[in-house]
Image (cartoon, rainbow, N blue to C red; front, side, top):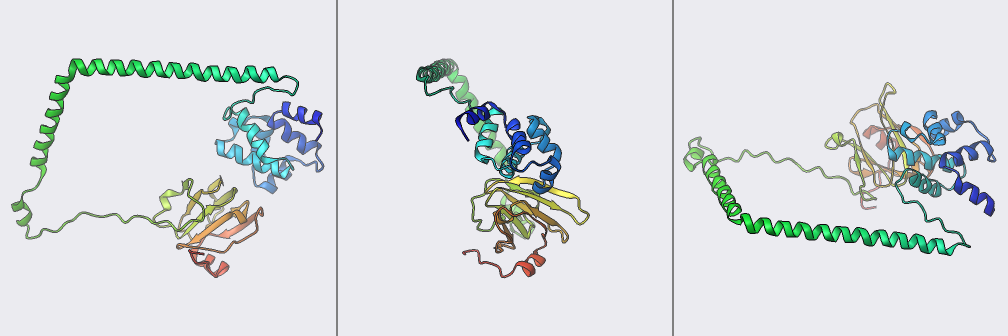
Length: 299
């Protein structure tokens, strides 16, 4: 890419870059074709090209879809995601500097430094004011505060005496048995990547099958009728606890980027990196029979 092309692309929005790559690139394609390949709805791809980010439900979907779309079109996904974050206000805009205009960079740096100093002065003044008012308040009302603290302690002591059962009441039943119910702590397997976020948490205590993303991947879980129960772009560290249903099926957009754990043990990889795989059974027994042998946890 020459200098003029780079300058033109810097002035284009993410949507314009994606549309230009799709319609003027080496492989000109229509949105429906790419939608089927990426398993991303057509309206979401169209929303990315139009810059209509409100049409996509969550920020993680916007960034994940943009990254996958950029990779499919042969663009640099990191550059696209960074530019998209700037457009969405998630990152500060870059300082406008050119090779023949170093003075602008100095002015920009000075403006940033000045803003930082001014904001620091404001915070310092606010802290001093709070300290002064706090000191004056305690100097004026310390006797009332002390009395209130003493009253609270007395009230707590009285309530404790009233609600604590006596020894005779314990022995009158002929049993001094502790009926406290201790909830067992749920222990997760030894994940290969530190957990970032958990999904399907309501299934955590019973889940025989747990999936974790070790690379970014789109995941869809469907029940026996084909109804979607979970669909999301998972990033490294994200965990999903699969419900214990016999006929649940999964589709992984990047099957090599997913770890599948069955009853505390990790299965071997069930596909290669950056390969889409569908109709994967999410039943523990079927997974063990299909993808055995199981790799030990300490592998």
